[in-house]
Image 1 (cartoon, one colour):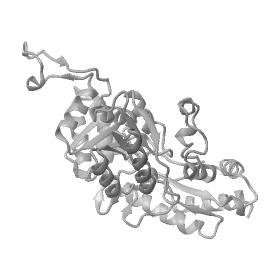
Image 2: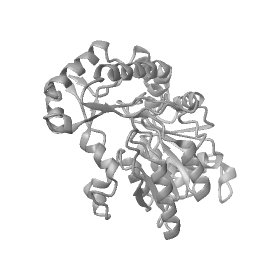
Image 3: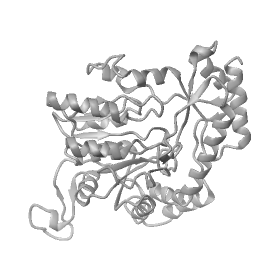
Image 4: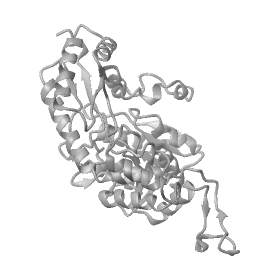
Length: 386
């Protein structure tokens, strides 16, 4: 079976992890700052704070931005639940902004309209989390301008997008945001097994995120409330978390960074081949924004259901039966039972719901062969009963 995504592990990656196993540090050693530097150098951001997973980065960053009880976090309904859950972990309320019908990214027009209403009702968001869905950047200059006008902070969910850019700015450099969250799950652009990182250009925000990552503890005498009692001394300044990355993960991540450009190039090639192979079939890929270059974490299609004799489920199951490991990304968060307990209902975000009814995720990973793309088209043509 061709999976929808898969990690690419080299002998150099294996050697990097083995090197850590043979060293004196398995957890908080030199591999972590090396990985942080490799990623921030590539993105062009000032700070990188590595963590145990991408969800941890969203949680810590939102909390460090001051999100708390009574505040609002807004994000897109088409995302993994972590983007929204980060707000709830901080005790905040969550709301959603519907997506653009072509790109399935947070729609700036819907965001602007919602902000006008929220200002009148006294419920403006403290943090907005634009999701760079499938690898393509949201329209960050427009979202940034709205942030300046309405006073919210911006946390990019860039879990899909490392290797991409927007208006010649690399995703993750935080040109138009306070911070960006990255994920290194095995199906992402690069992997550290599990893992995540926050990039930011804000010195104080970086310090607070790094402190929250390690139980809210500091060993910096200049940050302590009391006097230091000796070289062993530390202080817990606030309630933090154990969200640290290990050296084993960081060594793998740093090694993978040496191939980021090659991974991104191959993903772009596969996306172009999918576009060409599927042209003329009763379906459509996500729209491409000419102002950016996608990181191409995922390749989605939307079925033109009125033009075919099969349901989405029938097409999906046929593809799986033919060895194509398709998936669906994502079930709109507001339709999850736990969110419906909060008052969200079907019909509230119609573009997200229309997309969900039609979407299928096709295989996309650097080790895919050209003939695999042909296999996907052949299987899809059969599944569509054409």
